[in-house]
Length: 299
Image (cartoon, rainbow, N blue to C red; front, top):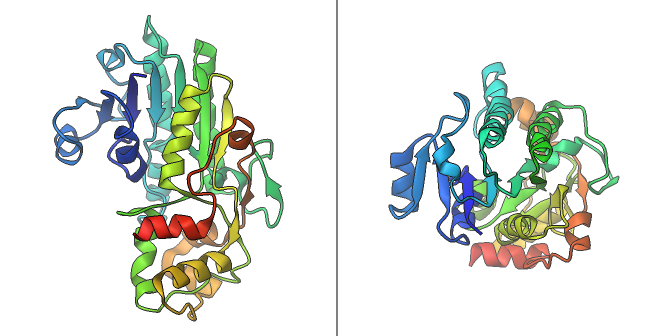
C-alpha cells in the first residue's frame, strides 16, 4: 500500500509513517520534516492554505492519509486562532481533494481524520457514528471538514473519516501535557468530573487509520475511540494511580475558563462515544482498557 500523508510531523503522523512502506509526505517545511522524520522519505513542499499540492506527489499513490490541522489546545482561542483552526482543516482538505480531482490516475481511498468534537456536549447519550452533530465551534469545524473530504467520494474514492478521541501515548500528545501537574501531586478532575472523556491509545489511533485504509467495506465516519469509555473523574483516578500520586486538587469549571478561555468548553464537554463501526468491521483493539493504555504510555 503506497500512501501519501499530510500532517506527518504530528504526534499521530510520525507513528503512522513507521507502519507504511515508502510513504510520501506533504509538508509546509521540508527541511524540518527531514530533520524529524529522516532523509530517506519522499517529501514535497505544500502550503495547505495556498492551493492544491503538486500532482507529482501522487504518482503511484493508492491511499491518502489526511492528518493536517492546527493543534486546537495549543493556544488561547482568539478570533484569529479559531480561523486558523478551521482553515487548517477545511481549506487544506478542500485543496487536497482539488488536487486529486485533477489526477488522471487517482488513489483508491482517502482516510481524512476528524474528531469526536463533531458531537458537541451530549451528556450521557451513547454516540455511535449515526448520531448527529453538535452546534458549537468545534462541531461546526468537524462538519465542514468532513464535508470537504466527502467530495472525494464523487471522484470515485472510498472516503473514511475517523473521528479521533483524546489520543494517549508516550512522547507528547494530550498525556504529555497532563503529566507534570499529576507527577507533582497537583492533578484532579476537571469541573464536576462526570463528563465522559473519549480516549484512544496511539497504537489504536494508528491501527484504526490503517484498518480504514485496508478494509474495502468501510466508508464514512468511524469513531476512533477505545470501547471502554470513562468519565473525567475515572480518568483522573486511573492516571493518579498509574503514577502513584494523589488526585485531590479539582479544577472548578469557572477557574478553567479563566485560564484557557473558550477552550474550557471542550475540556468540560461530555461525549459518550462508542466505536460501533470499528467493532462491526472487526477491528481488534490493542488497548481496549484505560489502565493498560496508561501503563503502555508511561512505560
